[in-house]
Amino acid sequence: MSDEEKITERIAAFAQGCFQQHPVVILGSGASIVHGLRGMTELSQYLRDNIQPDEGDEADAWMLIKTALAHGDGLEEALLKTAAPLSLVSKIVTHTWQAIAEDDLALMGRAARGDEHFQLADLLRGMFKSTHMVTNIVTPNYDRVAEYASDIAGYFHSTGFAPSIIRSREGADTVSVRRGNHPARTVRIWKVHGSLDWFADANGQVVSLPIPETLPEGFEPLIVTPGVSKYERTHDEPFRSAIQGADRALEQAASFLCIGYGFRDRHIQPKIVERCKQQNVPIVILTRTLTGDAKDFIANNAGINYFALEKDGSGTRAYFPDQPEGVTIAAPDIWTFDNFNRMVM
Image (cartoon, helix red, strand yellow):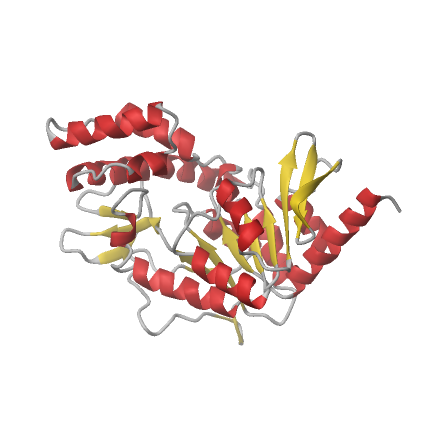
């Protein structure tokens, strides 16, 4: 057996072990981009093209943000550098919602017609071929990729709101659903930065509504955009409950599966570091390109029970505890979500 075949076999064995422990799934932006959702670069351009600041403080702050973007900063870095007035933050939130909602509604149409394949749906079907009744997904994404995948796979999903059209929050008593005489298998989706279908009315009342093509009149989107106010807003509901639920899921996880996640988020990161670095909980990381933060996690906080895969030219680069700098193998798509599913199912 060649060295490359040994590495591939090792990856498959580790992936199967992680899968058999029913991992908590962590979805980053890379898991949405493959379904046509805008990434940070495209969103940055949309905001530059569409935001019209008022004269004064808004215009001054927006000019600083646009200058930072023009000089090569990412959207999050540019917004963190400038303390934007609340009126400008509101415009950034509204236009961010509009951009992502356009993409999400298009995805919903394709999903409903059967024109979109969800690797996450395949994973969920495989994970529920077990005695487990609940699967946890943790994500900073606003879009509804996880919800669509759950629907396509045939499972009930919950994002912290009671099932209805005008949906109120579940509260302390979580909703349970039965199919026939048995509890329904449930995908719990912890959306720590909010969701496209979460809104607050003029009185601050939180509600979840079906999203239209334009923002519902009289409602504010409940999504947390990058910037200096990002971590202040998450002290409020429904973000606080979502973060607490995500914390519980991460604390109890027997393994982790990260899809397209950049390891930048303070609401998810500490629990993963705690479990992996201190308790060596196994973690699999799949992404097209590992971010600098992801590489720092591998080098300093992943413990001794991990592997990470990224695209490397026409091949794949694999990282292990004994290969922290990575080793390149010729297998062209072993880093993909689809390949992970093939290895474990």
